[in-house]
Image 1: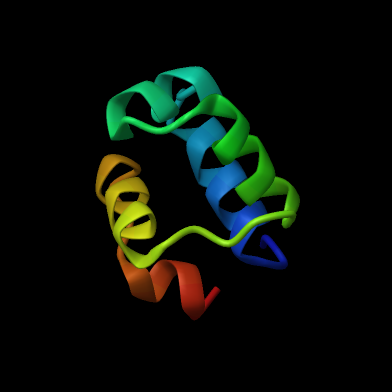
Image 2: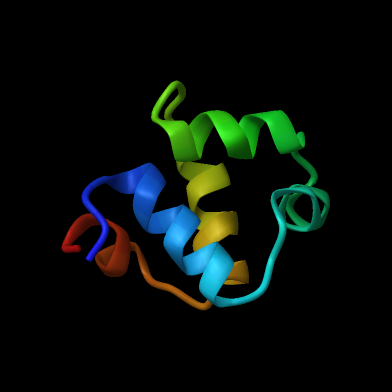
Length: 66
């Protein structure tokens, strides 16, 4: 069980075999942004979060109810 938004994204990204770079490229964002989100240094915009959960085959419930 992951303890926060960034950790949940990181756990799911790794479980699905995506690197930060690959995920960033698919959603047209920088790898540094993905790193910052996963580390809790930045919060994603709603649109970025929706893009991430779609690619990782998650729902927003998975993010917020985890």
